[in-house]
Image 1 (spheres, rainbow, N blue to C red):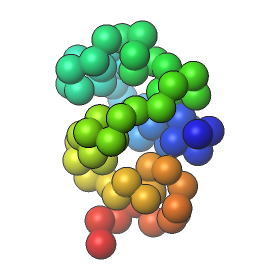
Image 2: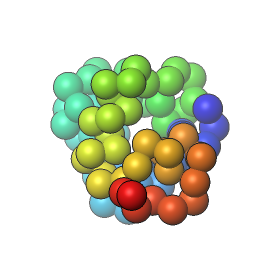
Image 3: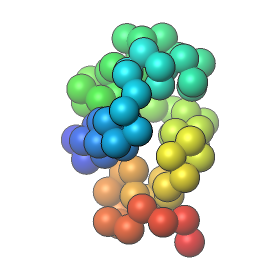
Image 4: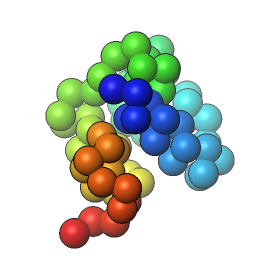
Length: 72
């Protein structure tokens, strides 16, 4: 899902952290996380929830169902 990859990268860069740091934060391998940002793989639901919680955004925002990042 291309929108997910773009939003993950934008959120991470907005916090000025590296992919490796984000992977560690989520308990993933570097390559595993990198795959999400390059649109090569998609995260499982539990990982998607963890990412949304980390950035304090909704899953709907991450996957492009809304442009409002807020949690409703």
